[in-house]
Image 1 (cartoon, one colour):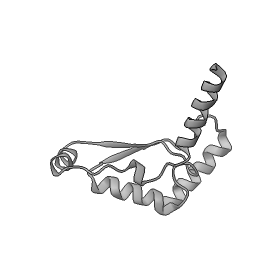
Image 2 (spheres, rainbow, N blue to C red):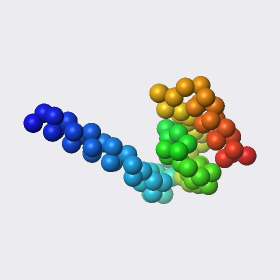
Image 3 (cartoon, helix red, strand yellow):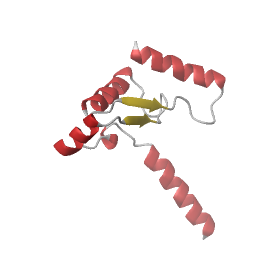
Image 4 (cartoon, rainbow, N blue to C red):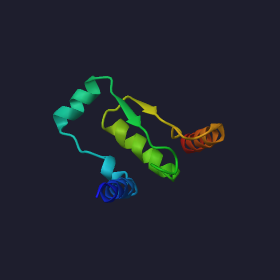
Length: 101
């Protein structure tokens, strides 16, 4: 029974991460909330490496544009996953630089 439960939890976790999209990460804000964000230094966080959270340059640029339009004044970004090596970090860095060019 424990093995079945563990397998179900793992399957649900894997299935839920495979359907991430920009729409799932976007929440509309009230005018009062937008003004609060504009009056405050707000840092957004993007923890989705290239290929996981975005696979086209336009997706990353759209995310940043929508965040800026909502009043986000800066971003923190995780480039590679924790299990990646130096080569993977450099690939992520080049993908990000290409998108921002």
